[in-house]
Image 1 (cartoon, rainbow, N blue to C red):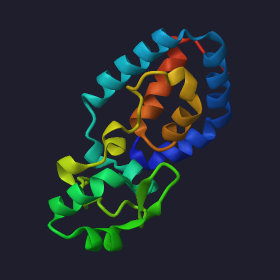
Image 2: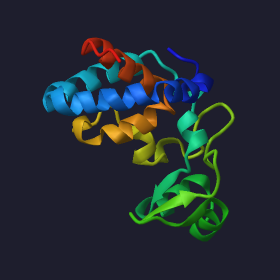
Image 3: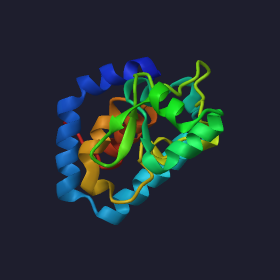
Length: 167
């Protein structure tokens, strides 16, 4: 598997190939079979991968905190909601979620863990979404995560081999 610092570079080198493979999948893959393939590879690769050693996702994106989690998160950190919001959050996005003020995410700790512990947002827990259904209909978003997450990059590369895709 690629080192986290190399993922973006390698994904950029394969950008055209990855776009072509996306088109290939759209035209040739069975939706249910592709979901099963993504899920199997996700489970296999994440079983042996320590995300705390990478955290590209936390470094390259702003965190996203749903409005309904703000009070719980503030309580977890032992501060009031106003302080939590002022210290960590920007305004809401179009989906009603607050964004963290900084990249890397304001809740990323040096050891790769999250200051929010078990209160970590669902969007963070589910990233890179490679075990979620309907991958065939969200392959552009998969291409985004391929340039961030070493596991997603590896999943995409293995799928190319499974499908016998050659550029």
